[in-house]
Image (cartoon, rainbow, N blue to C red):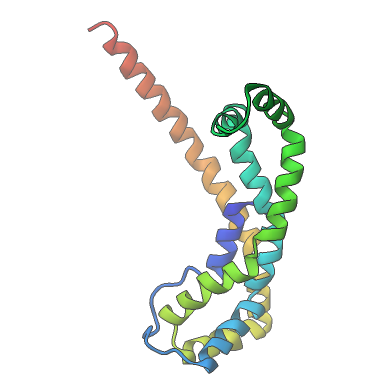
Length: 188
């Protein structure tokens, strides 16, 4: 699941909500309502999906600069001899091997359930009253609410592709205009 789909899904089920609650209400019962809403709306299940995807996203960010990054990391190992530094660098040149180890450690150490709890519980507490949370839970238990949860990720993904399709020609035209403007300045 890509980041845009996760954000769209989260928005669809109320994570990116507008202010509505007093923000002052905080109790065990409200915390329980928030937890129930996260479960019923499917947000909690995103944790498992994100756990599977996030390491790949991070590895995608790392890979383009991997070689120089490892050279720098090895150069910072000042207690190693030159020979050991070269051996270490040689061991670190295999990105696939690095990626496999990175993934295993990431899965072991990053707890997305805890992250969801740490980030989303305070936000729901801030923006929604207990009464609003109860009403959202009631809605998500209805057939329409369940359908909203089910179809909103696909709807938002398709809408995003439609917007991209309509915006892309404008972006290309703007880039072409800027290139033409800068080319004209070459004569100045």
